[in-house]
Image 1 (cartoon, rainbow, N blue to C red):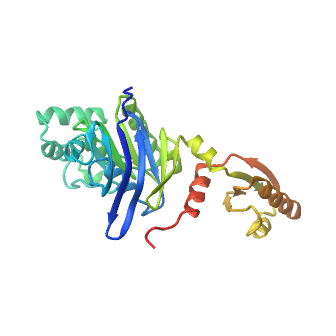
Image 2: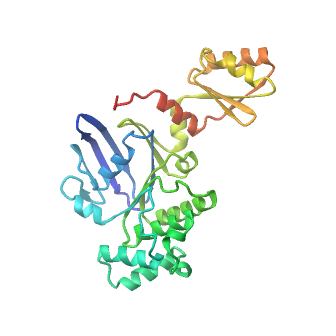
Image 3: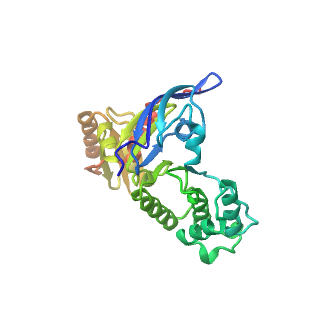
Length: 308
């Protein structure tokens, strides 16, 4: 794998009017890395990705993407980027093959027929090439969108909420495709709200209201959050929930089926509160590993909305 980062940016800033949407973001993404971007709606994660892909020009900051300067060579970067949006954006009254012919024409790919045929075969679409795009299921629409994004053989793939509305089997197959291409050297930036998808990324970046507040492998981000989690179960969960509200050390309470997850950053204080409530209500308690979702909620709660 190439040791030169595919992306290396420092101090990125983007403003819209008097609002700073991206605020001093710096990071590196290795060639062939799948980098996940998480954050609440309006947090600036999509804007950050677009700045790094040459789709937007930063108001401040600098960096290089795929060997190109982001301030002076945005057009060169865009030629090597594939961008898959959340919304299906192809002609539903055209066939799969006709849609790909249209995209190939936009990119000026020659010979067009060879590029389209190879892409259809590569994504398992050959047998469906005459099917109207509007008649496809969510998973096959997603596959068509991915085909259109990679047909010009980009070095960097941008995925914005790529599997919204797609069933679990199709999501897994999609991620298998992404990992296969990552192993071949394709760098991927993916914006997602799904925790299981974030866990499929090599590294995640948590952006909250314009600021990069956590970055690293999932296990490292969970460890660095410093949270402790207990699971409660038994017949007295409703009463336990009421007693835990506002108790010392209790920062999150979340029901999961027939159990209750209780999370806090002060381990000793949390354990005392949970133990006392368990004795009073007759529920059982056990320690548990903190989940990425627990960390996500904690980071959201600690952040200030820059749009207010």
